[in-house]
Amino acid sequence: MRIVEGLIVCSDAGHDKDRFGVVVRLDACYAYIADGKHHKLSNPKRKNVRHLKPTAVTVDLSQCCTDKKIREICWPYQYGGQPIAD
Image (cartoon, rainbow, N blue to C red):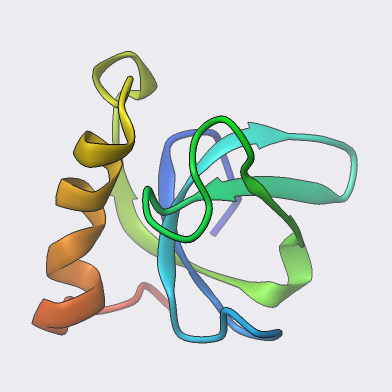
């Protein structure tokens, strides 16, 4: 699956391994991930796209204008055991 802005992803490597977040921006080889708690919208985490596992869910970034909203979106994936797309 291709990484696009608004996609909910799970980190596959690094200190934030197994943490979910939303892709808020893309560069050539990097995605910028915000989870609303550890990595806020104002300072998203830069991750290599090879270290991300995509889910099947994309959210509208215009509705994710606050860190609280990002946390609410990521909560079921982080703590509810939602499946990851293969």
